[in-house]
Every structure is written in structure tokens, then in C-alpha cells.
Length: 634
Ligand SMILES: Cc1ncc(C[n+]2csc(CCOP(=O)(O)OP(=O)(O)O)c2C)c(N)n1
Image: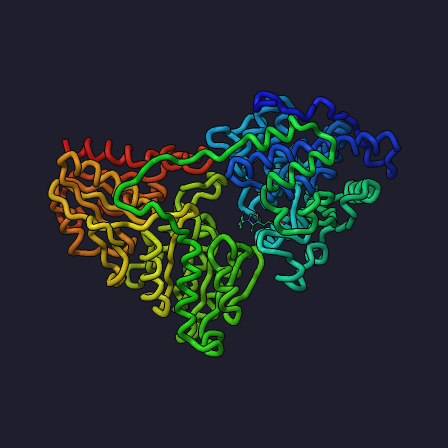
């Protein structure tokens, strides 16, 4: 069987209507719902497993869990127009639900689901309005949907508005604000919350003791009903109760993560894309033939064949290196001293942002916490309010946009915080546009008489050197790394540029190559790409230089004079072209009466999904850099 056919027949979906004035389900209604639930869950397992097979990751457990609620919502939409027919979801990673709905409505051909998260398939890791046929809203940053759904309710007062929720998303402070507005205005918003006690880093009942979704919402004044999500009678009576209540209400459905999937049930691994092996076992257990299993086993990751020059073949995950480098600094302190001086606070992403290493090696400084970036950042800052103490905070770069106001207040309180923002830029960001970490210069929002330092190391050796140098510096320090691994930058003699003997100095640019015909200025993951481009034009006789601007927001007077007196300067970065280094560097040049030809290349488009495809999609690959060099050197 090929990818041209979706082997699970979605036409078997049984359309039924459910009337919430009837408190009991008939046996026919129950058997139709059960059939739909099985159909949807099998489909979700199959097509999300293609993400695992293709190496583009994804999420199975969340959408799989909420299928019974989905089946009931569709039956309510069939019953009455009073129900606004959009399945809003504050957990955007459950995008498989929306893609399934698009296939059911005929907006997407069912077989297209087998391209889940593949580059250019228009099926990225989170729902994007306007990109995917049939998708009705954008979601993907937790805590951002319920507040918006409140507004939809205000605009549609005669309708009932549903929003799927999760015990992860409900941890966000935004949801508390949304709850207050919904209660104050008696909005007809109904939250259907999957309370599976699983998020990315583990179980909220363990890492966030005292947190209880139901009690929280009751405290705000919502009507709260609890149900067993895997028992249709219990689930339906919960729906009936919240729908016969005028005003905001939440139905909280308890279930283990991935009920019925051997190897994932109850586990936080169920949050991610189901491994092919487990999916195969599940589908076999459901009686699907070998041809269905073959679809998964035949999909292979796409290799990236480009051979870079000027950097090593070996790659390192700089986001993990951050944790290693911090651990090495802490190794120099006694456990007691470390615990007194340093607090490292996680926001449910320790495995992704490198904090796990610190958790394992230095539990004395580590605080696991919830998906509460604003509160956690401020707690790290408050720890570093004492001039001899240091807070460490970490999350994805995309969510730096959430804590800008807290950064201002931390700065005004002279706090010491080291912030690590991983998943910067766009490289390998199958999660796509809402997860792009491209507005990181927002962190530099103080006035000219105070300083915050922004650092983006080019490779793992430079990450080590930066952490060793700045860990115990005062004030706010921001350090960036990518989701994708990066190679080590090499000198012409083949040794590591940032290897033995290299010492990092804040504010000092690294001249990787001197050039007489012009300069490329880059940082982070763009350094090895720009290095490749520059070396290739040099092979053709064009003597172009390369600067690594690892301290992003301080002008290195010596280096700017060097590049500014050359014939051209091109800034190449994986940040937003509108807000990145390139949008400032031209001003810095002009202020110094330096007027080379000037261009800047940054992130300009919404994403294309997939992994290595994101960089060429933004025209940031070596070939595009070479083209720009040629156009400026002519
Ligand atoms: C603002 C924000 N912070 C962090 C994340 C990263 N993230 C994605 S899903 C997730 C955990 C979600 O848990 P839950 O919503 O309960 O989903 P489940 O594990 O049940 O699928 C996290 C931390 C995010 N998408 N948005």
C-alpha cells in the first residue's frame, strides 16, 4: 500500500446528533460513538506515527486522548446551530485533531494525512489559519487560546463556544485571567479539559504539587464537572450538566495518557509522536493488515546531503551543551554553596532546553516547575535579587516574547538572571511559525544607560567558553541555541576555532576570516553556513571576510570599523529580518560615518514545516548567501 491511499476508511464515520436535554445515551448512540472513537483513534495513531517514521516528530497522545470528547462535540454540532461549530483547542500540539476534522469535512484528501509534519505539506506541527485547508484557527502557544475564545463568545452571544483544554495549558497565568473575564461576563464558554496528568517533562501531580485544575477553576467561579473520559456514560452526563448551565463551565475528564496503547499508557512519552514499533503493535492488535503496517515501515527520514566546508562533520546539540557547561561551573562549588548561590528553574522543557543535565548532575540547584514562563522567570529573577545569588531560567526562544515585561521589571530590580533560550531561529522547526524564535532582540529592551547581554554562540566550544566567562556576571544575560545541532567552526589549518586557547570576551566579535572585498557578519547557526559560503567565493578569488558577532547587541568598535571600511557588509541571521541584528547594524555603521554597500538577510516568511527545509525556505542557505555576496560585490 502506498501513500496515495489512506487505508482507514473515514467514510465509516457515523454522523449522529445528540440532544443535551436527554440525560442518557441510547445503546445505538453509544455504539455509533464507540465506532467513531475507534475510527478516529486508529487514524490518529497511523498518521501521527508517520511523523516519527519520517524523523519530524509530532504528537499522538493529546489528540488520541481527546477523541471521545471530539466525537460528542461533532454530534452536538449536528444537533443544533446553537453550538459554534469550531473545535477550538488551547493545546496546539494536538493539531492532529484539526487535520482529522479537515479530512472528515472533505477539505483535505484523507491520504494527505500521511504527510503529517512533512515539509511543504501544509500540515505543520501546530494549526495555522490560512495555511491548511479546513483549519479554522491558529494555536500552539499554551495559554493563548482561551483568552481569545472569550472574545469569540463576546462576538457570538447567542452561541455556545467550546474550547478543548489541557492540564498543561491550564497552568499558564493567562488562563487565570481568562477565567476571571469569563466569570465576570458570564460568557457561554465551555472548556472540555483533558486531565491526563501528563505534560512533556512528567506528571504535574509530582512536579507541581497542589495544582488541581478543577479546584482552580471552581475558585474562579466557573461551574466545574468531573468525568471519566473513557466512560461514555460519565462523559455524556458531564456534557449534559455543563450544557444545562448558563455561563462559563468546565468539564474535566480524567484518563491516563494514551489509554489502551501498550507501552505508552500513563507515560509522558505518550505526549510525543508514537514510535513506529508501538504504532505497528497497536494497529496489528486492531486487526489491520500488513499493508497498513508497511506504510509506516517504508517511510524513512530524508537525509540532508549538503557537505559544508569550514566546519566539522560531527555535530553537537548546543542546547544540551548549555546544561553541560553550567554543570561544569557548578562542579567548582560545594553542593551547599551551589544550593545557596544558584537556582535553576524549569518550565516543563528540561529535556529540550538542556536543563535535564543540570537536574541530574546538580539536583541541589534544580527546581522543576510548571508551564508558567512569566512566573518562573520572575522567580529566577527574585532569587537573583540578592546581589550574590544567581537565577537561571530556560525555555524556547519563541516564548521570550511572553516575558518581556517581566524582563523590564527584573532589570529595574538589578536582578541576576541567566536566561537560556533554545530553539532559536527556524532551523529544524517542524513545530513551525508559532514556535520560531526570531524576535530575541526584544530582550534588549532596556535604555542606553543599562545593559543586558545577548549571546548566541556559533558552536559547542564557544558555548562552553561563554558560560565559563559570564555565569557569575551580574545582571540579565541571555544566551541562545538552536533546536538543530551545529558543527564546530574550523580554522584554515583544520583545528577548532573556539578550541584550546580561545577565551571569550563579552562584546568582542570574532574575525573568522579577514577579507579585503567585503564582509559577512553572522552569529549562531548562521556562522557555519556563512563560513561555507565565504570559503566558496574565496575559492573563486573573491576575498570576502567573515565575522562572528556572538555578543549580539554590543558594538565592537574595532570590528565595525574593519567591516565598515570594506566595500560591503552583509548581515546574515536566523532572526526576524524586521527586528534582528540587521535592522540595527546599518544604523551603527552610519552613526560612525561608515558607508559600505549594505544588505541584511533574516527570516522573512512564515514556515514551511519539516526540518532542514526551513533554512532554504527563508533563503538563508549557503547558496543564497553566495548570491547576495555576488550581487553586492558587483
Ligand atoms: C507557552 C508555551 N510554553 C511551552 C510550550 C511547550 N509545550 C508544548 S506542549 C507542552 C506540554 C503540554 O501538556 P498538555 O497540554 O497537558 O498536553 P498532553 O501532554 O496531554 O498532550 C509544552 C510545555 C508551548 N507550546 N507553549
